[in-house]
Amino acid sequence: MTYTAKYPEPYYRDMLGLPVLMLEHEAPEQFSLLLQQGFFMPVPRICSLREFLCELVGVCGVYTEKSLQTIFLDGSAVDDIDQAMIRPGCRLALSAAMPGLVGATMRRDGFLKRMREGISLSSRREEGSDIQQDASFRIQVRLYNAVGRDLAGLFLHHGIMVSSPDLAEFFKSRPDSFFRHLRSIRFQGTSLPVQQSGLDFSCLPQGDVVLRLAMELENRKQQSQL
Figure 1 (cartoon, rainbow, N blue to C red):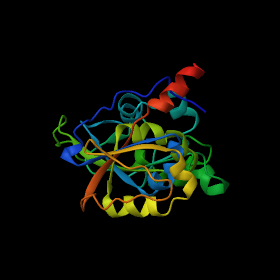
Figure 2 (cartoon, helix red, strand yellow):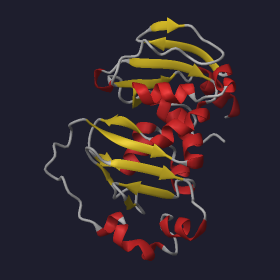
Figure 3 (tube, rainbow, N blue to C red):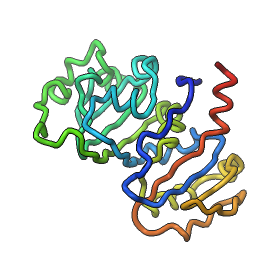
Figure 4 (tube, rainbow, N blue to C red):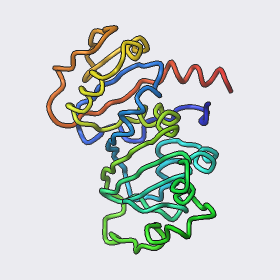
């Protein structure tokens, strides 16, 4: 299912000077496990959660209201994405509706939200008002279940920051079918050979790298559906 008319231009190109691994992969949803484990993204300024999702990443309003049913910011449940603020070092988790009583309790503006008032963002005092408003910073993000599959292309198009060991471990655990969707690999602008079973990422330095997907193929599919 497509929720955006097109992939927006990446909002943050420098990615704090980290080396960039660029892949062209026809099935971004197959990266959902990596996105669930957690990654970092730079944010150019303090902003509301709605601004981060809709204006920076490009998640459309319909999806934020209909499909993002469970949101945690720094361990607190979020009901109002206009009031929740993205600040330096925060931890954001996005999920579709979860099953059972726990899922119903954590759901945004659900009938049972009073049961978790103690961990709702609205019940906690916002801090950090003295932070420079226009200074860039990074946040940790986790995407769960259907959200990870639906929004993988958008987040990976902008680029995510992950550690080299975590990235290598993810690729080692992928089945052969994952690599059949891989069309090209570039590291710091240099093309690497595409293999049908596994990848050699010994060229990656230790520390964090940026993983980014070139979305030309997926973007053409989207445009044909408009």
